[in-house]
Image (cartoon, rainbow, N blue to C red):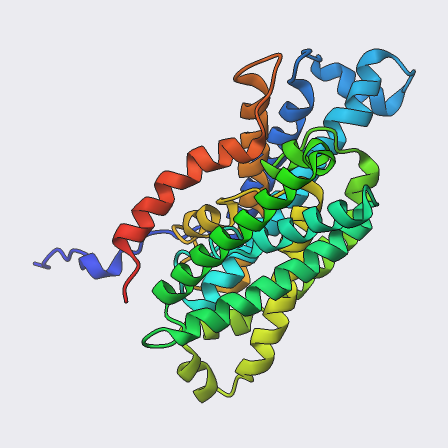
Length: 343
């Protein structure tokens, strides 16, 4: 008589979903959000009109709205959302600071004050000029935050960097406010932009910003393996033969390209770079080869959804999309500050 055998509980394995499958599902969700974004607004546009505008464009009102307003705006939301989320993921991995974000560490404020100063001195210029100014402001602020954070006890700890970023953001915001008080013309030109807005952006702005974001994303994705090692700690990375100084420099270039170009075209939109990497890490724990592309996709989805909400909540009027992202991100920031930041 043979004894029945049962499988050991350890022999059972929970099936794992391939990261490629999750990324594909994210892209499908992004496409659905893109189509929906084009249909909603002050005037509802049927879905079939979207296809007609590409196949048989006839200069009708609906076709013009789709091609010149709704589609460019939605594409810019995807571009900016991806750039901000990836820059936030890079900053969190490099500094091992769960609160790292282009907005919280002052990089967006630095880019914004540089754009405001450019308009104040030179008047209205092209998006390329705004982008260059934003790059300079973002890069300078990043260096200052790291320097000030390194002066505190224990060096550049997550808490020291967060405090330095908050202090510098407060100072930069006061400078920006002073310029706007002095120059009514500058205020009239960019007051909606300062709240973070995608309204009025056309396809030319999209194509002007696209090369900067593509280069920034390309650098970020190429750093996936190195960022995984750096997230374990600088000493561990050095022990594994990583050139940490060069990795920091190249990562900083990517962050400045992504955050600077985003601010130049859409203003300082906060919390995307903070929230999205933490959402992604529920699915991808520590491998930045997947965290970064996932962040790009889900950052685009989050900003697109926030922009849709900004358009429909008070229709026919709309809110700046930066207000919507703050409503999502501010409670999340408080949660992280209480649960994850240590001295």
